[in-house]
Image (cartoon, rainbow over all chains, first blue to last red; front, side, top):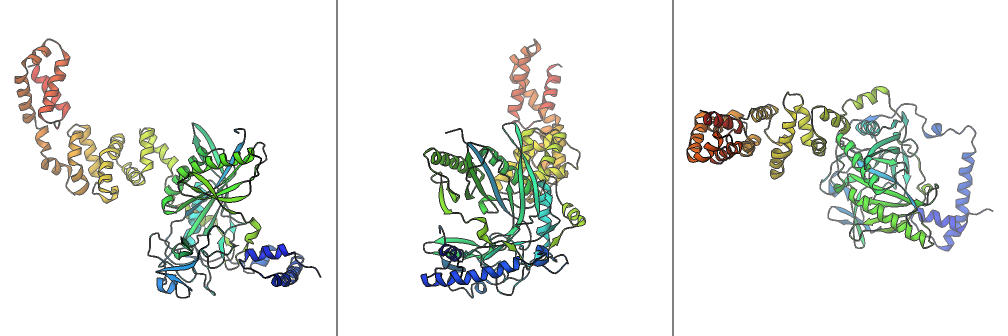
Length: 97
Length: 472
């Protein structure tokens, strides 16, 4: 059975910002290949039309009037955050990756 | 070293002025308390849907007009996928395949030579949240998340840092005057990334991107430094990698940030939550109705009323004075005198009190009257300096102020005659010289009159009266 290369799996893992064990890499070489083959089948559909695939609605999008609505309090903004620092949401530093 | 040809392109993001954000009804304002201008859409909560703000599309259309772009009639939005904590949805909604505007230009002038800087496209997208890095953590403020941006992308057609700076100055002026953005680089409402490559042939070299340059001045410095760096690398047998750099203005160098992810890695696909947007002729026409006069149109208009190039540029550099002056053109007066006043005594007053002209009580009618008085020499320039605070701060009429400041007395004939008589009595030699045909003596005597009145007398009137008295 065809597999993705180790590099291809690692590239996808990098884009998703996850680390994989050697065992997982081997597993995903097979699983991702199956997924990609399925996606290729969709691409083979005859008369594939970008617009049709995008939206079945022919109506123009509705535009919202430029009016300010309700907003959350700073407390509620952070309610589901694992870490806070005053009103800020705190996350592990992510610069110069 | 100098036989490399540099080629540059600029990507400028400007925050669009509107009441609410691009896809949510949170307020689009700057300087709010941390995380108070946010709703669940900005936070990317599951089950929320974006709704497109009409005013942003209007602003985008206005931007197309002022940047000479073709307006896309049927457009959609795209998702740009990436994982980074500044964007909780893990994608940014942008326009990849159908940008609102394409094929425009901005005309610049460098060292007397005009050049059109081509704009490949302008597109609408949402801003990310603002992050501040503190040691091992980053602090996130979502007030900026979802703020509307337009990104303006030039063709790779900029040949040197002077052109880049001239382009940015012109772009800022256009977008500011069109009320599309306040374009404050120091507040981040205008941000500039630059792509730079060098080559000895017509084929472009590998480009590097310099991110987030903080001022127009620094864009000039960063571009020159990056060209210099690339030349050194190539001359020493190295290769230029496609990478992202930043400019550190403290050390004056560009510094490597990261090796770039290629375009495909963003896995763009059409945003399925926002159906197609079709803009009609009526919508475009309606959006452009509110577009004010743009700087080049103002320059032409001001030249017609007799202003000098220097006066015109000074006026355009000061938006509030410019808008005031534009209103003054509805009145019949001496516009050159008006501009001189606006740029001298009135500007000094405004700077000193940290005000804009609309904060003051200087009505057009009052200003026109002041100009008339200056022309008829009923007021001197010195009088203006004495009166300026009261002119700007009170509702009193000019006549009332003249009385209050005793300016009536100064133009009063008997008061001037008194001074002239005194000067004639005290300077018999000069009077004789004048009578013997020495013109310089008149100047001396006139000087004495001005000295006695501390310069506040109407000089023409005093001079006429002095001559009359001497010829008696």
